[in-house]
Length: 139
Image 1: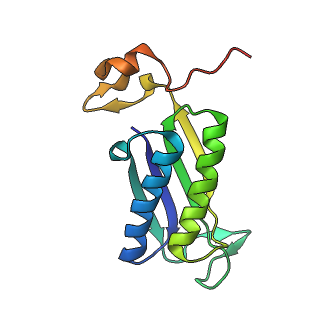
Image 2: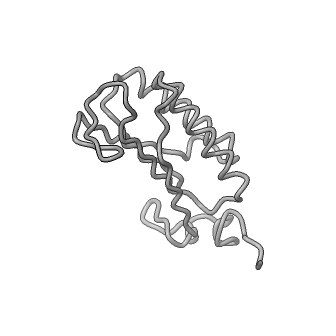
Image 3: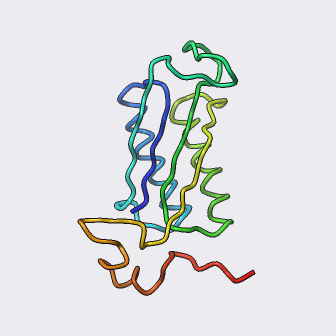
């Protein structure tokens, strides 16, 4: 199932609540997936990360921010909308417009995901019928 790993500076509980709620909603709206299948893991650091060759000191500079999104293959237009929406939502929740994460999309076929001890392609008939959520054209 789709999931997001977020690497960011340590933040308060309320910020993570906002991120969990709003990023899940943004993902569901952009992709059409139901929100209840989307998970988020927060990986936080104090100061042991750098951006632009400089160790982040907790000040106003942009810290190291990274999203790793695992999901089935998506149309390019959906990816564009998703990246734009996730970036804006993150900046709003943390209250810093210049905090824009690098986002890596790791798309996978259903044969590469195991849930409840089985491959998705073996567990769900709709996944078995299609290798990917979206089939790309031959060109």
